[in-house]
Image 1 (cartoon, one colour):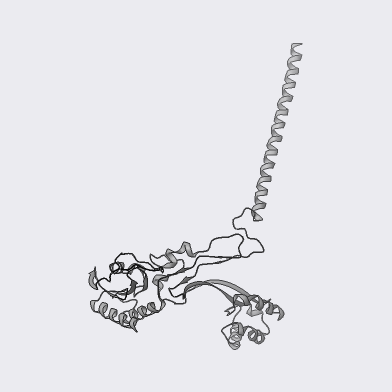
Image 2 (cartoon, rainbow, N blue to C red):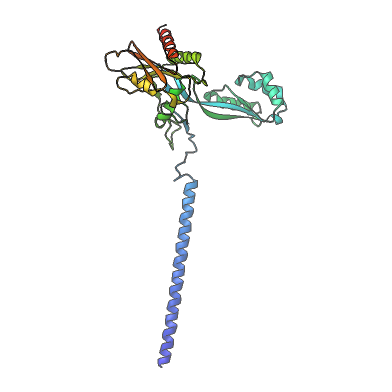
Length: 332
């Protein structure tokens, strides 16, 4: 009797253990399926852009533009521009003369030149003179002429600097490291903010203290006295000595580390200079002209009508002659 009860208890306990294991197995299966479902949903959300920070509304194609840099008179020193290139699968073109004649008005090349380029190329990319507002109309024209399978328009955004190398020390170039150029030290202001729903995002514009006209004069004088690769050194600068604004800064060494900052600071009573335009300065007494030596450079500063004209050179004679010419040309 006791044996029978013991056996029955064993059978009952065995069934309970088996039920517990089956319950645990089912729970684990449900848990795994839940995890798989959650992972799958997250994947779908990401692929659909719901929780992706790079999400873009399919109806909105955001254009990003870096802020424009102006000189003190409102002239453009640096700006983003959208350019268009006409790309041609040249090896597939049969009516070459016709295609060249159609495309030529939208480029700076004549039809004969384009025709020769098509004949000598397998693939051709030609800079166009198309404006942003004309791109769609040009594409429609290609379809109408049944050329859209051979010719496409490629958009390219580029940073342009209308003054070329003039004023580069103060303007700089996008992506370059510099201790004084606007592109470097005001990068956070100039670069556009990432956005999810705006058709256009632009950085903030800035206005420099630089004067295009005065910078041209300074650059011309420096280049006439000493070459860029010469062992000699010459720097010319013009500053507002009450605000510290730099109107022009030119030297034959393109490295901004070669700038004679000591000479610039000596020309300013506050010792602080700025490449941004200010609204106005303070009235201070005109300092006395002075000459001096900094390391191996000869420095001279003269004050005229609220401005400091600075010359620093490895040659005392060059320092004086260049500064005299600078003053003369500014007075014209």
